[in-house]
Image (tube, rainbow, N blue to C red; front, side):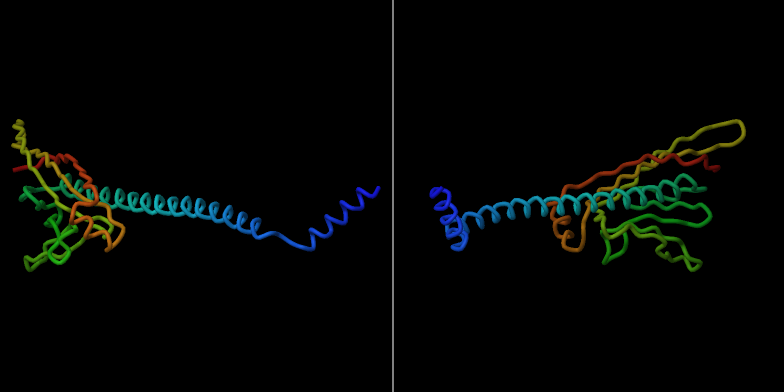
Amino acid sequence: MTYSKNFLAIDKKRKKQGYTILELVLSMAIFGIIFVILNQVLFSAIRLSRENYIRALYRESVTEVMDFIKRDIRNANYVFVCDGNTCEVEHNQRIKWEPCNPPDISSICRYEQTATGGYDILKRSTKNVYIKSIDFERIPVTINSSNANLDNETIIVTIEAVPIGGAQDVPLAESGAIPIDIQQIAVSTRNITK
C-alpha cells in the first residue's frame, strides 16, 4: 500500500515540475525537421504546378497561332509569298503572317492590308510564348485537268518557341537557358485557279 502512495506522490510532484530542457529541445528539433520536410514538399508542388500551368498556356497559344495560320493558308484564293519568315495570302482580304515589328519581335503577328496599302495588326501571339523564329517553306504542285489548270501548294510552317512565365523569363529564353520547342505543320491549299 505504501508503494502505491509513494508512486502517486512522485507522479504528482513530477506534474508540477513541467518538462525538462532536453525534452523541449528534442520536441522542437522534431517539429523543425517535420516543418522543413513539409515546406520542401509544398514548394516543390507549387513550382511543378506553375511549370505545368505555363506549359499548358504555351501549348494552347502555339496551337491557336498554328490553327489561324493553317486556316488562312488553306482558305487562300491566292498565295503571294510564303518563304522565309513571311507568308502573304489572299482570301477575302490580303493577310500577312510574320514576326511583329520592334519592339515586340518575339511575337508573331497577323496583319490585314488596309485600303491605303499599309497593314494593321489583327492578331498577335500571346506574351507567354517567346518566338525564336518562324519559317514558311512553299512546295508548289501543278495539276493539269481537262477543266482548268489548277495549282495546289503545300506550305510547311515551322515555329521555334520557348514557353515563358513572364518578363523575368525573357532573358533566359534569349540566352537559350530554356529549351526550345519546335512545332511544325504542313498545310495544303485548296485548288487555286490560275
